[in-house]
Picture (cartoon, rainbow, N blue to C red):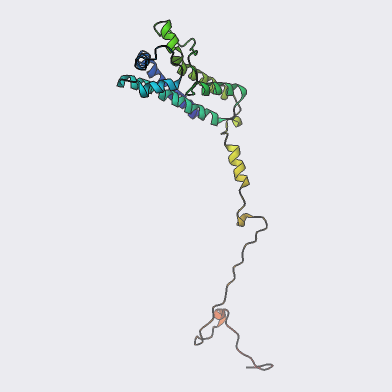
Length: 226
């Protein structure tokens, strides 16, 4: 959870820099719309911004600010996946997360999205026409950030065991399903090591005392003595 919170803070810092360039961002979109001869429909999706940058962007300043917006959207989408992996979720947290995933989808229609108070990104647009054309795209990131903060706030109230990685039960199941090694199998018997006697050379002296080892005893005649 701490890693997710740190990632969210990092995105917020990047968004603050982007927010300072909102006028440049809107101007870049306006230039692209003119180049594309597409002055009627509003900016309604992330993929539309992507298309403008790839095919109708005429200068490096416009490209830079459009790329900054697209990178922020990509980081938000990646963070959604991170959130999803932290815990299975509750009806409340799943509602926040599903909403985030929908908003950062490439083809989702943003034209009717509007950031509410305390956000003032829509109010900074110059006129009603600009708000109708760009109100949704400038509202996207602050709305998603708010939803993610709500997700974290509700997730931190869950019991600790609920915050375990969702893949842990599967990993535990996989480990129990692995076959036991032969040395650990029930009823396995350890092998006894057998030592073989090394034969003595014919011309070697006869062993004595402890050195007798496995040498053969001297030959005795049947029923007699040496």
